[in-house]
Length: 114
Image (cartoon, rainbow, N blue to C red; front, side):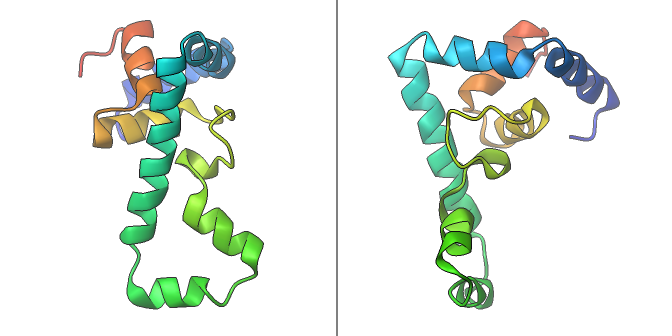
C-alpha cells in the first residue's frame, strides 16, 4: 500500500482488534468462509504461476516444508485461512484482485471508496 491515509486507517483498524473482528465477520456465514478460502487459494496460485521456471526449479531443491509454504500459503504467507494476520496485506490483495472478501469488509468498515 502506498497511500499514507489508507495505511493509517487500516493501522487504526488493526489496533482496534480489526483482525479478530474481520475473522469473526467472515466466520458468521459459510459463503464468506468459502470466499476467503478461495481468496487464499487464488493468491497462492498467482504467486506460483508468476514465478519464473528458474525460480520454480530452485523451489524444487528446498525441503518439502518450504516447498509447501511457497506453493500453498495464502495472503501474507498465511498457512491457514483461519489466520487473519495483516489487514494491510489483505487490503493490498483486495486492491489488486478486487474480490477479497475481507477487503470488502475493510471498505465498508472504514468507508474506503474503491
